[in-house]
Length: 120
Image (cartoon, helix red, strand yellow):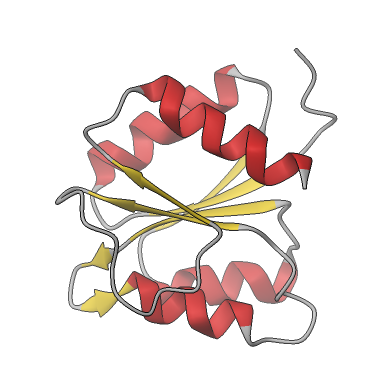
C-alpha cells in the first residue's frame, strides 16, 4: 500500500467522527488535516492544497453540501475531489460532490471512496 504522501482534509463537527476518520486514514499512511466547520475548512484551504476532501453533509448549523459547491467553484480548488459523508444515508440534492458515502457503511467503503477519488 502506498499513499505517496497524499494529504486529506476531513471536515466534521462531531469530534468522535473526526477522530475516528483521522485515525483510520492516518493508519493508511495519509497526511490528515482536520476542521470542525466551514470557516475552519476554508482557512485550511487558504494555506494548504489537499489531494482530497472528506466532508460531513451536516456541519452543525452549516451545510456541507454548500461548502462542497463553494470549493468546486473556487479557482485553484475546483479539481480537488470531494467525498461527502452522511449519517442519514441520503445524498443531498444538488450536491456537486465526487462521491457519497453513508457513515453507517464500513470503514472499507470510506477507504475505497478515497482511493477511487485519488486515482482519477
